[in-house]
Amino acid sequence: SAIAGKEAATLLNQWLDDLNAGKVAKELQLDLVEAAAKRPEADVKERLAKFNQARPDDGGLGAYVECLMGGDKDAGRKIFVEKIEVSCIRCHRVQGSEGGDAGPNLGDIGKRQERRYILESILFPNKVVAAGFENVTVNLKDGRNFVGVVKEDTKDSFALLVNEDGEMKLMKFKPAEISAKAKGLSGMPDTVKEMLTKREIRDVVEFLVNQK
Image 1 (cartoon, one colour):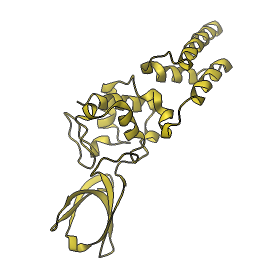
Image 2: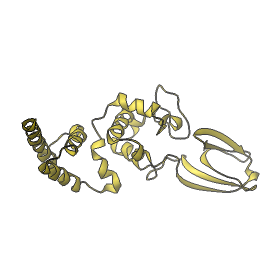
Image 3: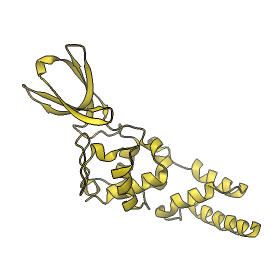
Image 4: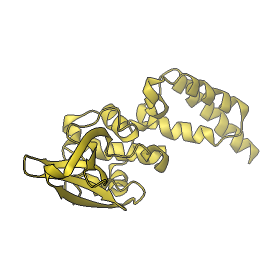
């Protein structure tokens, strides 16, 4: 009813006033922002706009501050292991799961890193690339080029983990076959933020924080 809708908007405005005053727990911020975004009332929109305008730029991370806390770790695990669009498990290992070796092992990431680092690594993987997991471009003397993560580099053998049509394949070359090598960006795509909702991102953060 109109009355119920008006009461909901009034209550939401009170919450948004608290949000803008910094008085709302971080675990509740995403739920509150999402609820406010669905309302048609001008005063609700105004308060939500005030919150959005006050976000820090923070290298792009400010747009996702409400994803830092409040997630569901079990839902995050399901996304990490099963969601084909992002295919996290193809490149990363976590506790109790199979996984790939193209990316860092995340089995104890929650012990090594805090939430902000984990969120930033999901959204902007090229900002801080884990040592040894940069993509490397290899040019062969026969004209072929490959891009992947180095798995072996000795005087007798060079091995590259390459993504071929969604499948990780280990390719080995003799150093004499290589004409040039160049380090590039992270092997992790920077499109995860387009493939997951903020709620899903928050759940994955919570899952990874609990990998200890």
